[in-house]
Length: 141
Image (cartoon, rainbow, N blue to C red; front, side, top):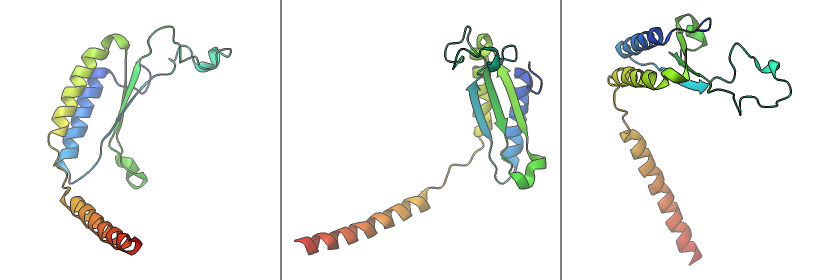
């Protein structure tokens, strides 16, 4: 593992803790991101100056970096939690199975979003536009 990144097992355990602490509070966000590593620590992009985009045709499959954060803003920066791990291609399928389980368990405590107010506003807006549109149609005829 690179410095600053957790092992896959540590990451999943910490992510599970992050979900469980988020459920006990009134509100909060957890941001999950993943992307393909563009280069490894062994060969930074400056090592290949002749190739304009060396990550388009890699010699071997590149690992995936997965990050999670609790999304605290600048005011609460001291409470911000950042997690990250690097998953090698060979371990990707097993990791994603465990990752999906942790996410499902963590998201099961979420409340369903109340959309009734948004629907009412949309209906009122359509009704208002419909009335305005009908008046304009009468003027044209």
